[in-house]
Image 1: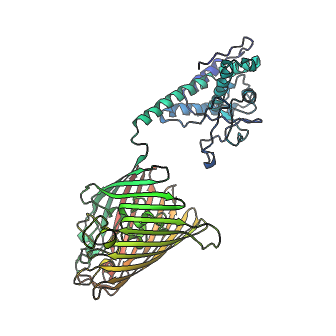
Image 2 (image 1 turned 180 degrees about the vertical axis):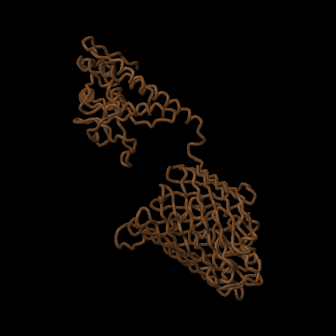
Image 3 (image 1 turned 45 degrees about the vertical axis):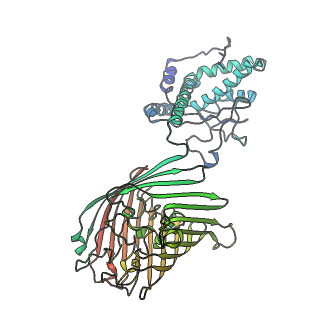
Amino acid sequence: MQRKQLSIQGVRRKDKMSHILWKSLVVSPAVLGATLLVSASAMAAPNTTTEVSAADKQAAVEIAPKAAEIIAQAAPTSDDTKVLDQVNRYSKEGSSNSQAQVTSVSQFSDVQPTDWAFQALQSLVERYGCIAGYPNGTYRGNRALTRYEFAAGLNACLDRVNELIATATADLVTKQDLATLQRLQEEFSAELATLRGRVDSLEARTAELEANQFSTTTKLVGEAIFAVSDAFGGRTGDANNTVFQDRVRLSLETSFTGRDKLTTRLAAGNASAFSLRDQANTILNTPLNGTREGTQTYQVGSTGNNGVRIDRLTYEAPIGPAQVYLAASGGRHDHYAAVNNPYFHDGDDGGNGALTTFASESPIYRIGGGAGIAVNLPFSSGGSIFKPSSLTLGYLASDANNPGNNTGLFNGSYAALGQLNFAVGDRLALAATYVHGYHAAGTALFDSGAGLNGNNGLTGGVVGTGQANYLGNTLVQTAANSNSYGVSAAFRPSNNLSVSGFVTYHDVNGVGAGDDFEAWSYGGGIALPDFGKKGNVLGIFAGAEPYARNRVTPGGYSGGNAPIHVEGFYKYRVSDNISVTPGVIWLRAPGQNNAEENAFIGTLRTTFTF
């Protein structure tokens, strides 16, 4: 419907100074958006900033009763930066000359509730009902409006009055109101023109995005890690060189209902673990000796030479109050179970947490993996503060896709997890975990279902010593059953301090003579979020990687000391999408032997997320 020109012969502007006109031309290109909030006693924006509370996100300004419009404050684009600076300078001019007389509202950068324009439009709103407020009928206070917010409200009233005229109800509109509207339209002509032009442009851009979007249900999430690293100390330092390694993950995250998520992830990498040596220059992390101490998170899932493969295919969805997790490939316990290690844990070995697999999460979550199902069942709140808040159950099989003998979903290697989660307020989280596993011959205890795929053919686990990972005796690898028990806790006494830790015990029963053993692991960390800058994290973690006393590896290596692991890192947030993390790892008594030389690993990791 074409807008009819409002014209009243008796109303004329008496003062149109050239200075005021120039100011209108300066601010006219800017786009600040518009939200108009009006009440019976006051009309105001809910906030003078662009922040909107969670409760207000669903609220919208409604044009009533027949013309329903939504007026929202639009964020400026980067192209408007220079213009916005001009507007900001213009808006501050009044504060230094507050005693000067003004003759037109175009001289105000904001429209105050005491201004005639504010009161005139409020009267029109009350008379014609051209603007409704929030759904609860309130207008949220008596605050100033920007000129663009005011213009949006004026535009709504113009539409309403034109509608009344077009529907032969013009007798409802008084001449005095038409005169008021004409004067307001003249005073805010620049803002009205800008709003209409920007709305048209925004609609065109939205239509283009809708026509060219990749998918209505899928978004791409990516992570790229660049890492420069080296190992030092004794024979280990002599045997290794400085390396530049990488890993890339591209995840297609699809949601069909808005509450579910299908994750299809592609991964590629070229990272290899360092060669740890003893004083006799014996390699400690060969398939025969099998230690995985000091393994870094970005080395997990490496494809060797940056070959691309699907390393995760999972689906998560709520069923009633429960959350269900299905894994077709690459499933891990830490996908669905709470690991209680904030700031050290970043998803499944992501690039924004700790440096190593040991400091990232309790080793109990690295027993088994692959394909399977899990469910998280919440409990009702109330009662004792130590009452469990949820129960987590999961089952993952490593060879679920293989139809051969001693493989498949139920006859091959698997790990079944049960975990009780406790929440004590919003500062303390506790968990008690049990994992029962069956491990086929040739596998390792802590292998996440796949081990270090592509890492120079290493088939051992991803954390712990060879004595704790190797299944069988000194002659041959055999199958084994394991029962593992763990507790974990995370305590956050303040927003800038987090303390977390875990203890695990593993009872392994082999099928052959002399195959039984026990393994232990423990660790704790302190994280200082926002240390030095918002988004930064300073972390220190220490403990003993999984180890087993009184065992001899097939390579003839033995030792009964706890392998101490100390790690410190500082994640520096360069931007929302880039972080740089320098860190140092100290390995004392590698291979469970105090007589061996300490090893040190230094890493500078850069993580890009998009």
